[in-house]
Length: 82
Image (cartoon, rainbow, N blue to C red; front, side):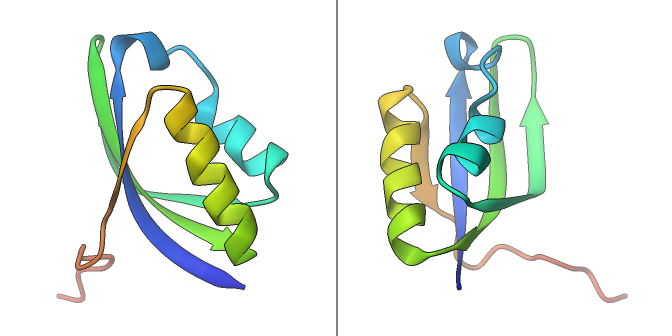
């Protein structure tokens, strides 16, 4: 199993599509939304993707074909331990 953190950036056209749901079901990837900010016309989300490395790569490629911008999200704070 591989874990990978990524940032998805959505435009208005993608906001009504079940992209995260389809990603997890079509590619057998466990998705964990760590942070998100969604408005009526745009949004972003930081996700942790877990699964087979090849499935994750194929899933990310599929997401980009849907018009979502995908960037690495390394260095994001996952937990505040105050």
